[in-house]
Image 1 (cartoon, rainbow, N blue to C red):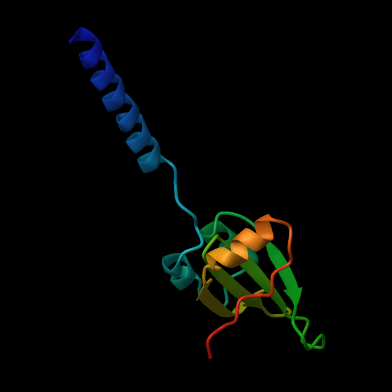
Image 2 (spheres, rainbow, N blue to C red):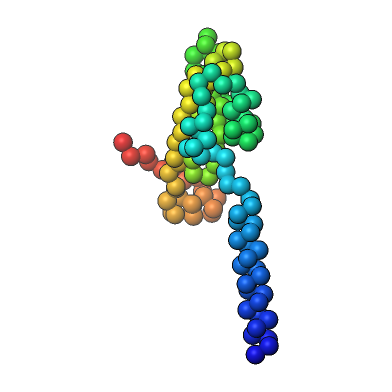
Length: 122
């Protein structure tokens, strides 16, 4: 009986600790709500403050005359693209949900094969 009581007590302690960690550890800053907080005319530093860090990828705008940059912030299932003009100010933003890859694709990738990219429905 005493052993069972100690075991139940340990389970309660472990579950409580796990719940506390879940409450304390912040989630990903790449959310639709944070994308909505980004405003036209903001600087890159202001966007980084909202998204808690620098972009994970920087792309040059296809028309190099405009000198615009596209900055990408990503998480496992969502993505935010922020377009900066030549003055370094936001002129467009875009939030997107990344479709999960099918299980067969993940298995082939794990086995070292290069599976084709998943098709995107039109």
